[in-house]
Image 1 (spheres, each protein chain N blue to C red):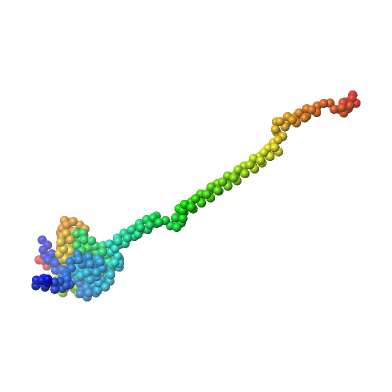
Image 2 (spheres, helix red, strand yellow):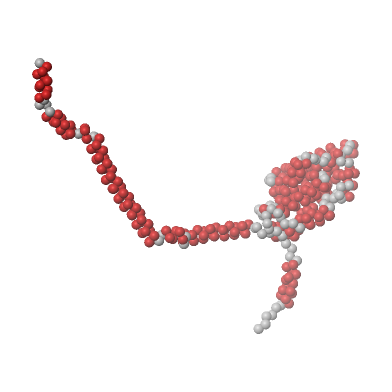
Amino acid sequence: MTKCYSFERYIALRNEPYRASFHIMSEEELISSAQHGDARAFGQLYDTYVARIYRFILLKVSNRHDAEDLTSQVFGSAWESIRRFEFRGFPFSSWLYRIAQNAVIDHYRTTRHHEDLESVPDEVLADRPGWDERLDRDRDLMLVRSAIADLSPEHQTVLILRFIDERSTKEIALTIGKSEGAVRVIQHRALKELRQKIDARRPHHTTTEA
Amino acid sequence: MHEDLITQLQKLNALSPDPAFIRRTRAALVGRQPRSVPSWLTQPLVQSVGAAFVVLAAAATSSFFASPSLVLSSSLDAQSIAKELRDVVDIQVDQIRYESQGSAIVKTSIQEIRNLETGDLRTDLLNTELGSFAGDTAPDPIDALLEQITR
């Protein structure tokens, strides 16, 4: 007696290897593979998060070279210690942000150098790679960026994660180790402080507004 | 209230790293393995090796007590034990014999010492000697003649 397959079943069996090869791994699967030493899986995680982490660091250190060095350090540390990462309600991104935050703190602790964007000429600021040309032409955006660099680290973190990277309040709370209510309070204060600093930086802002 | 400010912040999302930097860093990361712990040294492996070590240690301990070594087995041989006991008894007998002979010699020596050194203090000997002196109390004829001359 011969086995009879339907046409659909035949097609499904024929395509099975292709489907397997094109299987897109979930983030959990990628992390699990990376924890078992799969460098390609970690490479995919890197592709997903490198821009966010770089942006997070750049807005804090205000220097492209330092931001690149610190971004490399963050992913190097994450790769070294990925086996210690555990899924306990913590998103992988919050783990990376925490490593980045600590890297920035260590950076300031060791270099004791903080570049004040106010003292940097606008032409130099605009020439920085990674800064979109359209953004360079937007003086308001440069003021915003300069004012962010002048905020406290906690206010910086909340504003960057909430409004630039569009993270949820819950994820920010997990990242900075505070309650969601506390994050909302910090967010409100940070926005208020940011506006004050921008207004203070705006040249002849009283006359321009008039 | 801060809508305009939030809109400005959202525009900063356009910040992105240099593509050459992304490629360079990615190649460096993917090209190396984590150094902290070897990739094959996973937690289940460590647990398995630990459990195997405990089992081996327990097996070695039990086998040691179940089959004693040559020295231990020879010391538990019945003939050897009997021989050791006989030797001990012989030694004890020799000791008793030596001590009994020794005590006879000591007794004789004490007797001799008593006769030689303290014999003059014995009451019976002193009385005998005193009796002999008493027998000599009769008047001597020479003494009588000398007394007549002096008169």
